[in-house]
Amino acid sequence: MEDINQVVLIGRLTRDAEQKYTNLGLSVSSFAIAVNGRKKVGDHDYEDEASFFDMAVFGKTSESIQQYLTKGKQVCVVGRLKQDSWEQDGAKRSKVKVEVKTVQLLGSNQQRDEYT
Image (cartoon, rainbow, N blue to C red):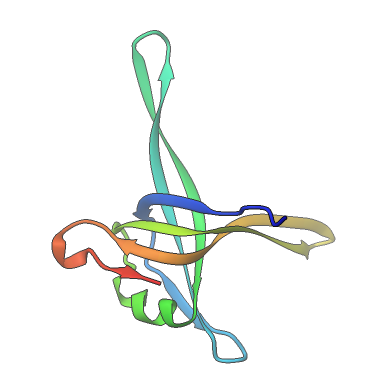
């Protein structure tokens, strides 16, 4: 049985997406989103908190959505978690990213498009 690895996040881009191409010519757009939430502090107080997630979208989806992925835009992403590992200065490093399958632009009607 295959395990399930799926994540759905709604947040705002923290920077414009950056598009690059692999050696094989595959388009890759990288961006990050901030997902805002609240946590209870004390009996009646709440505190805002943000979580930040790095994203990568590939292929035709990357090419078609690239121009719309600008800082501050609200998006809904569906994808899977992927752990990247590397070595830097003799130390092992790793980071969890979201490999995006679908991006939906949220906001005004003109911006409500879904790209898969």
